[in-house]
Structure formats: structure tokens, C-alpha cells
Length: 161
Image 1 (tube, helix red, strand yellow):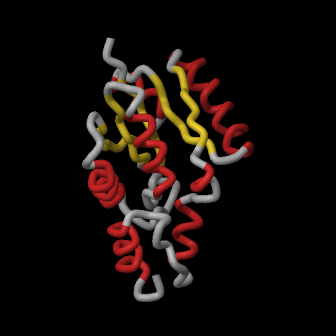
Image 2: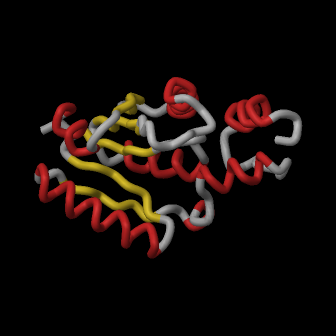
């Protein structure tokens, strides 16, 4: 049986930590949908289309990885796409507390399982919000995001980035 998993996130912007989880998850499933959340309540730095374009570029060498977007409940999107599992990366205990509740609710609503992947230690401190903050104040994000993402941050935030 071919199993497809779903790796959801905001990816504003995609970081090397995200890419580590995506690459590792892609080795364990026949297909992996990287789903960009379209959340009208948030004010992301990059549009959904821009985030999807960055993810497509960053994952172009990975077989079986598809980039898409969704709005609404994750489990509704998962059910509509017929996925076998949701994949989430965990950086710290605080991530686990929140993600465990979400995983249990998602399972309660639809029966879909969540697989947790521990973030590689070299990325455990990394988040999109930290990357945005460092770039916004002119800090160096080289090595934290792909080079083309760093360039897009610089374009969006001006020369300081």
C-alpha cells in the first residue's frame, strides 16, 4: 500500500530545520505533501505563493515531495488528500506539549496518526520567527536558510537583511 504523509507548516520562510524534517520524512513515505498553511489571522512576511515557490525550489531534488497550500482544519485537508499520516518536527519539550494535544485532537476527529520527528540537534534552536527577526535587524542568516531564501529576505526587508 502506498502511503502518503502530510508535513504542514507556515514556512515563513522555509529554514534548514524545515528542510531537514522534510528530507528525512520523505525517506519514510511513498509521497510527502508539504502543505503551507494559509491563515488569514496571521500577517506573514511572504505570501502563500512566495512560500510555496521557495519550498518548491528547496525541495526540487527530493523524489515524491509535493508542495501545496491549505486553509481551514488540517485534518479536513488530510482527509481530502487521503494521507496516511501527519509528520511534525519537534525542537523542544514545549513543541511536544502543543503538538501532542494537536495530534490527539486530529486523531479523535479523523483517526489520522501523527508521526513526530526529533529535529536534528544542529537545528533545534531554529525557527522562522527567529530567522525573520535576525534578518530584520541586519543579522547574518547564512547557513540557517537556503541561499535563495536569504536573498529573498534581503529583498523583502531591505539592505539591512
